[in-house]
Image (cartoon, rainbow, N blue to C red; front, side, top):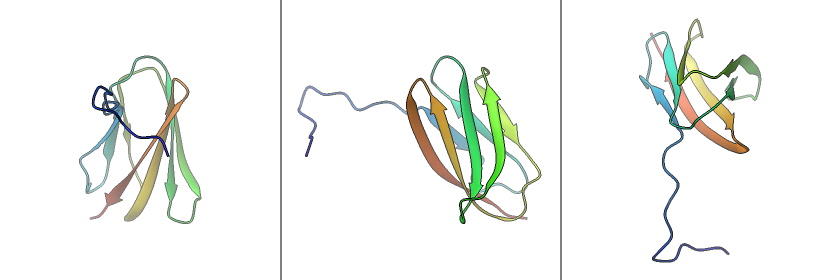
Length: 87
């Protein structure tokens, strides 16, 4: 298995979701450079939103109450995190 040596640097955060939990909408933000795409899926894997952007952040709105997975693709890398939408 690969391991980190003492001189290796961990990759910095590339995706941020806030506020989390959210009451109605949330922001997906990247610290990377360039265009990115993201999908918002429910826990059954159904894709509910698709985002394509070159901005640093985009707002996601009008999701029903629930748990979601946000998957971002940028520069050949994939980042994923969960978000909770409540009322």
